[in-house]
Image 1: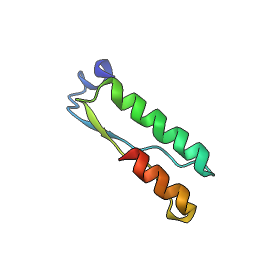
Image 2: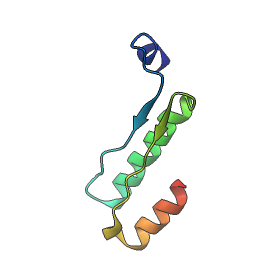
Image 3: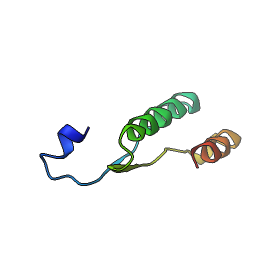
Image 4: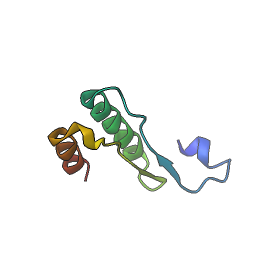
Length: 66
């Protein structure tokens, strides 16, 4: 990641996963996004996607992500 951002003058970036059609798929995408940022935590910020229509599942994912 650093090889791509450095030459372009990018100091920080933001990652946000695109939601899947269901909760389980979105949780996996959230985890993949966090893992990618975990490789270079000094370079960026990560968001997670949570859909309030998922009810208790959304609450669990929010708590896990925080």
